[in-house]
Image 1 (cartoon, rainbow, N blue to C red):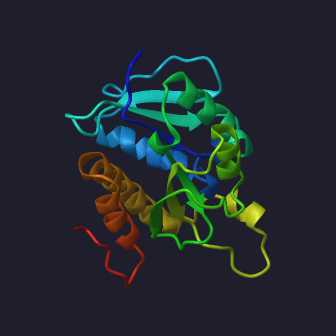
Image 2 (cartoon, rainbow, N blue to C red):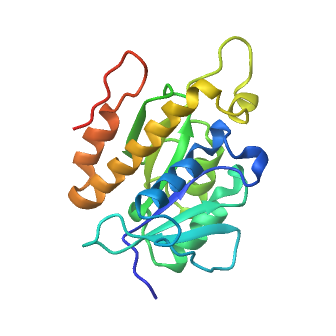
Length: 208
């Protein structure tokens, strides 16, 4: 059985109608990881039973490969896929990195952390239930909150605005850089980079 350095699971909903929605920020980050690792030709699909799109890739040559996953169970049941993958490949919760959208951060910011509450995110809640603990790693990608009276449920399922897409791409690229830093140097340097990053207009992004 292949040994993986980590499982990186990006959260989202399957289907073209959800492709560029805010709730699919995690899927977009996985796509950026694949691009950085050399594209699909260098990140072969891992054929497994179950509702998950999985690929194997290397961001750091000296490290074991990563297992990348995009659960196809819809957001609220993300834990079904993540729990099965962690069990199959004997990955501890601390070797699971979940990349997901976050209403409590503005678009352009992100935070890397371990454990904590699900903050109302049903995908995170499902994963904690299936892993039996909240103590997995999380890369929270900010999407901000809706203005006015619009509800969060509709907001997260709406597509990013056209003028937001460049910001989304910048965050996804920085997320890849931060995860690469984590694999090379560990948790603290990755936190320092990812938590300081700010791609919002008028703010200076930390590119150190």
